[in-house]
Picture 1 (tube, rainbow, N blue to C red):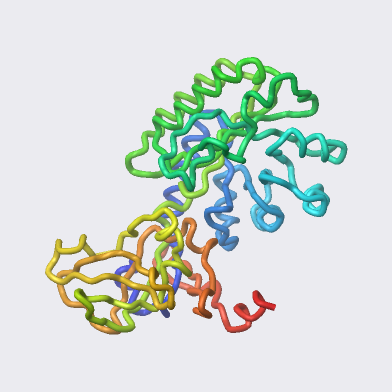
Picture 2: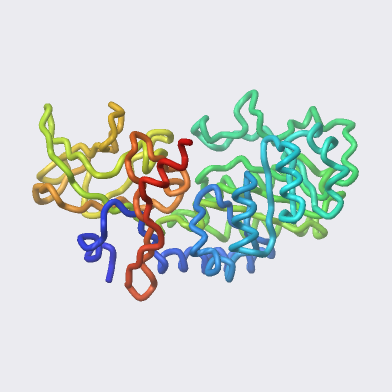
Length: 377
């Protein structure tokens, strides 16, 4: 059964993972890594529903983490390689990572020098800032002037890099194939003196490989060019959103419809609490069966149920009038929604469920008052 028919039967609100869509993404990523001769690891910052990690591990080479909890989750439930990067580590975190991580990337030469004596069994790298701005939104652009993310070229001059095994470049965010190729080709030229002394290079995430408009062959060709020039280097990609792109939904219910210059449908979900990138990016999530405002006969502004005045999702239109109790299904809600949600205002978090490849739905997790209470004292 598809999500359209299933939605009225699902307790709302609920994040629903689409296993069949996830498998399609994983199959494509496996084809790309095999054709390019690279590794692809999963960036858990986009999605951390560990119930699906065993399945994902059949296709990918490991996980990457930005904090100790992500690292532990990857180690315990995904296995394989565990890569870790943070803008700054503290001593307790490094101690906890020693038995977990296979690769650790440092954001500064100072942190590398400080923790180097402890890194005897871990392959260590440095995150470099190639000063190549491709991502348009400053909030997600690691190469804006004055960025704290990555070491600029001027700081590297004369640095002692003995013990460093790899270089890490993460500058993309939902970028297309041209951006991927530009990053790889730029690194090949700009760091020609450093790369022959390394064992691996990580081109980060943000390669939107599974997007319908992305041309994977352009990425494959760029990696092949790079590997032909530096054959000793292991090439690594770490997409997050691309792994779960269009592989999840948020099912919500219309609680009320109020009038104030327009029709406003108040839902049992929230932009700020349940899909914060709607406000941070910002962007307009697609809704099944809906058109743009005014495109169809009946238009509504979708609003959340918190007291935040700006808890507004977007405007949509429908062929028939909405009724209180109707379900609406937001698309592409696996990435950066489940991992970023909050219980702001004491609003319960949506259930987490999975629509398996056979069309059956089951709930993986439900949240209670105790979850809210335990986060606050």
